[in-house]
View 1 (cartoon, rainbow, N blue to C red):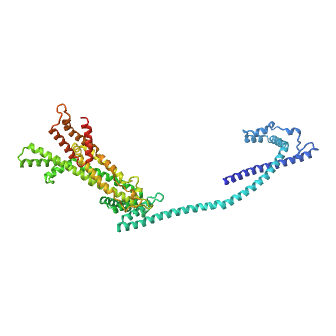
View 2: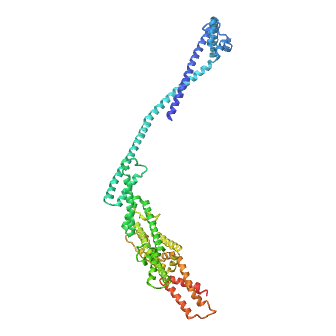
View 3: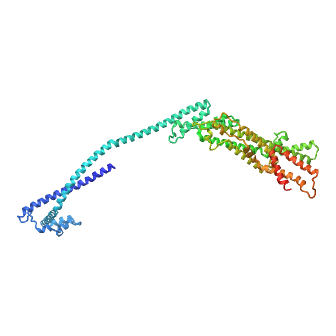
Length: 568
């Protein structure tokens, strides 16, 4: 801006100088003319008004009108043809020359009269021009001073600034080059350390740390290492090792959970923490919990599969198991063998065989269900509980326990415990809805199902109630303890549907002897011995059926009294 302003000032001053010079030259010419006219007038006052050329200036010449001169009009016309004029002048040279001199004299007199008439104005303008010249000189001095200041500023500020800008850019390029060189050297050094720990020492924890650092350097957006031959040659190897370390970490974590080996669980978690800090760790914990939930479902589905119950029974009766026969075929072979050995009627043998087959299928189903709940589900819950303990023991670099890093996906074993109870409820009801046989088994054997869940809860309570002294003091009170009446009731509530069906059948079976005993008072006021025997036998059988569940006996007694005895 300063340069533009100085240039504009210089251009303006040059224009003013030019115009002033023109005016000055014009004024000097006019002054010469006026001086000559004054001399002529003074010398010719006594010579009857003759000028220096001997021409007399009369008062009429002061008011000359050039429009009356034909030759002036002809020459001033835009359509004047000089060739035509010269041709006419050649034809009459003396006359044409005379007219031309007369026109020139007239024009000269007109100019002189105009100069004389504007004499005062020209004098005043010459004074203004002189003042302008002095102002212009002052402006020139100021402009020259400004130029000196600008030159000093350019030499003292602008040039050093340009040098600083250039050196700053060079410094930035050096820093970028240094960052690239440092990243490349860091990757190469980490690759050497990775090779020592992964291939030689088989230490997957430190290997995960080094491969994570290498991946972080390769994925930096501000320092992209694509196109560098030293790095590109190792990319496939780096990705392969990264995948192998992840797979080994999963295997270590899985084997540690299955064997309840906390050191192996800790190694697996440490591997995934080193691979990707909290995000990677939370992701693997979420996958582990999801897998364990799916395993719980699969164990219950397999235990409640009616076809497997039939197949187990058929295989036990066939005695071979390798002949590839189905359960129905094996049952038919068994029936034919019985007919050949025992000379009984086919109808009797078929009835007894069907009854024993149903009992065996029911027993096999209940055995598998008991094993699935007390062994598989309990083992799965222990895996989650040990996972929680390791997450509370391990700390990151900021001394935060791992369980805080995965709090978005896992807080404690209680959450998984609630999910397990929901899975038990869903799978039992789903199996009962799919098969009437399973529904009847679960309903009729509700006391046994109740006892299964009660035993399962006692195992869970006794296991999770132990204090782990290896935990940090601040984490010991936070470790999950599944105990108390409330947790047991939540677990038993998962089979409430079958409880309602079982109690309904109990009341129905006990309603009939009650009706015989108290329902026909008009016909028979006093019950007979047979009526009493039937009543007590029925009561005894129901109590025998629920002898392992005292709470259920109390509940059934209350329902019978409320719905059977009181209305009568």
